[in-house]
Length: 248
Length: 353
Image 1 (cartoon, each protein chain N blue to C red):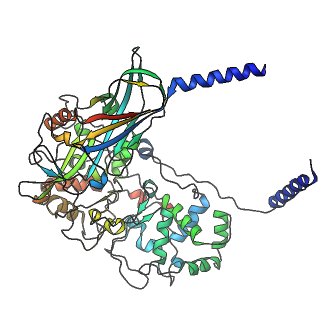
Image 2 (cartoon, each protein chain N blue to C red; image 1 turned 60 degrees about the vertical axis):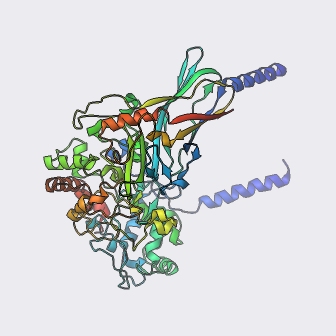
Image 3 (cartoon, one colour; image 1 turned 90 degrees about the vertical axis):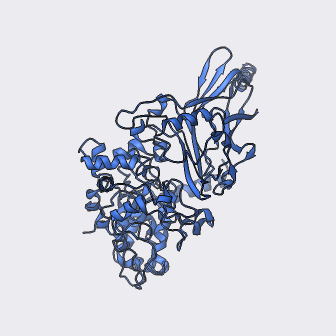
């Protein structure tokens, strides 16, 4: 009898180890390959595609809806979101409480910002972080706050606020939305055999590069009500994130 | 069971029985009554596990807050520089200490302090936690100029305080830690949540067209753009509790956060104050330089001064600011004043009789 219980217990332990895994998402940042941390902030040390020399003073952004697409067609969506705060070195690593079943996945994705449904909900932590978007622009939340200064045509430092939100027109009681400006980032196929860490890179320079060469002399502040600028951010954001490595 | 094991158990039982006969005060828990707009929209307040709110602790803290016994010559209480009528700030630009010396910063108003999540207090965030904050003015030579040992002795020899401390904390020996714990408990109860704008959000009153337009200017990135630092209708604190250089000076006589962090990038940065209760809290800014709310609005509209650490959120600095029209300024002022909470400054729980 004792022997039977012992064998049975061992069998169950082995099953647990091979079916569930923790996942962690680390976010690091670079400027065209050169690492960027908050220690690089507050000095004019970057040059964008257009040739604007600039500094970063504040950078935080939201990612949500991490989704695993399995080869058999099943989809696992992780609840929750993560406000990456590079300025304060907070939330650069995100470990959802949910477990992922091991196996082969065709793709793993996350959303930059919130999709429109999630953006319409109320989040006490994001309200506390003053992350809201004014109701006159549709409400919801910022996708990114990227603030800094650049050297303008007079060679003087001037502030910029590259704030990504849901693009809106006709600010007021009934704004309209020309197109969605959240986007999904694909990390590609992966086989998860054990606890897994995804190391994700943001190339900050890409926000100014492709397909729109961004001129800070022309577009620097008050970009939230500028739907054209928001769409340009959306377009440039497509190439910002990449999967640097995976640790298992 | 061996004999020595039996002896230990008997000793423990006897010791326990002896303790049970000792009368000890147990303070009555008094959790914060969290306003609906706070409950619905922002994270829970910070209440240290080693200083939970109690009826006795709050009452003791209130008595201490209004008692000049904390000052070296028994002439000045916390409330002298944090007047309830002024939302617990000082109507003077700088406060005068017991020796007649003026400070160099405007006294900060006191409300909704339990929601200061990173617990950095003072204009430059130099002190962590509300309990620690209460330590500072008592022994500051230009404020109460007291010696904590003397304060402890004065309270210990007082006819009422030893019993009140016993009731609040279960100990009769008074020390600075318990004194500041009691004051912090009282300060955490100073909740302001019943302004006209709060009532508007709760559907109880209607704002005037001027107030509504002022709110839109506040929330419009191309106009006031106040919300990035002072929150919105989704954040009833009306501050981000963070530190910014809001364009007051080209050069700094007071480095603010920079003095504390040692980082030149923080020079000239001061904590964003809440915009609640502006009707009562003049003068404004860390140094009380602006006597009126009009002065403040004019500063952001056309008075901004550039400096290396000015926050990039400040708009059109080269033009001095966003350039609001007179009508826009008046409407913005009307909205800001709608954040003033008359029930707060008249709350009998916050006033000494």
